[in-house]
Length: 368
Image (cartoon, rainbow, N blue to C red; front, side):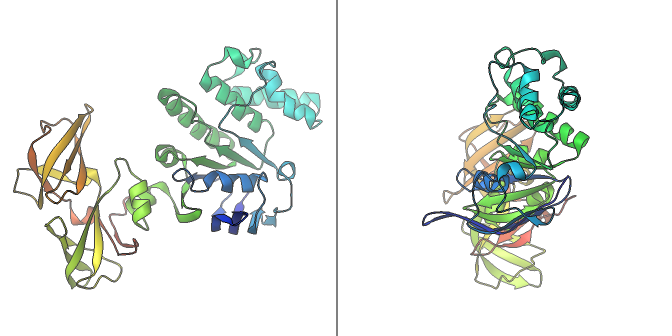
């Protein structure tokens, strides 16, 4: 196991700046996920940690020691890429042992490490098969096994599940989580899939445009996002946002007049929100309720209903054209073209952001 520190890490390609001073500290044995939209810099950041990209400024430290000048092979890391990159003419056993043979590891130790990795990853029945005779999930396990046998200080994963179908992704997520529990190594995992991030991570770094917007535990990101971007990125369907203004302020409470016409009360405000200031009100789809038309804070004209059996999604527009999504438990009789009332959620489960997108009130803290 090892610690990892990024200290004001920056990366430029010529005059193009892609990473803008990222600070992170990953603890021994922690499963850390870098998540964000395409182009946010998460893979570039991982490649800098791996030593595959140079650092333009700042420091990368492993166990407190600066490693900027060390090559990839000298850092004691192992990386699993998006593509399996297996040798097609070699058996699974040979794929697992090849790197160790190049490192001049004794034959008895190679055999022991390969056997242990195969046991952990349930590859023992396939050791004499070639990659062409394996399923996608089995090939990915072999790719992970090649990293495991090296016994690295830190594992690096660059979107390793993106080539798998939906069912395999779910199974492999569970296997990766179980693997981390068994071996306890520090792991850094890159994905654009927030479900992977939320289910795997001890802590998540949410990246946007080469900057870390928030670094926190999964439920803290969900329950207490630091800004509008994190609030909209974490959670599916995404949080509903409605612009408005503060009508009056009373201590930690405020009455808002939303552009959609509704008036709502928000309690527990932590920042400055003077009367007249522009704000954005946020409420998650699962915290809204549908009521009879005219009985809620606003009316919703339904554009689409998705029935999933155990839950339902209702998509619609308010009178001023703002789009909202409600997630309802179980099944619903609401259909396209209907107008329903909308209750915008308990004040404890609502959010408020200032004109610059900073959180003024972060909703309920849950168990984060």
